[in-house]
Image (cartoon, rainbow, N blue to C red; front, side):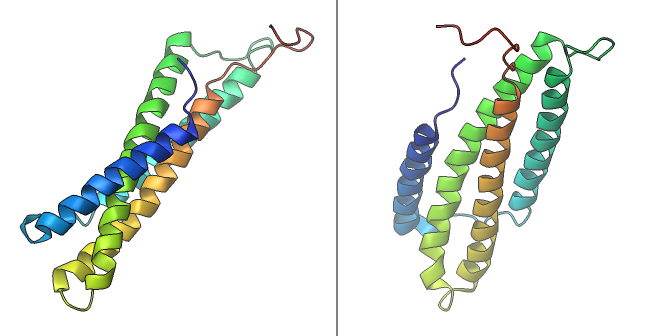
Length: 154
């Protein structure tokens, strides 16, 4: 599995942001209101992944010490897969919520629904950004540190 590239995440966010903005222009009145608790879900995922990154990073660095608790390689692989999926989903949703924020921001004074959606979209975009950052930290923590004295393998 290759590391996640930031340009891939940027392309996902931009692409889905453009599609969402076009959808909002065409059919905003027909779309349902944004769920008020959407940002909470992303924040909880980000906090969980930051906690996992701390545990995994500490265990991988301590694996050379005698008596240290080691993680099964499948646990690390699952955490890396979770990180990759979370960064992708977070980037996709970041594009969606950013586009909705950009669309509803000028409409705040005209529509009551747009004012509420603007707040929810802004908070959701920030929480998605936090999720992407936490997922990238977790992915980095899942890398096995180089053994001292081995040097690079090329």
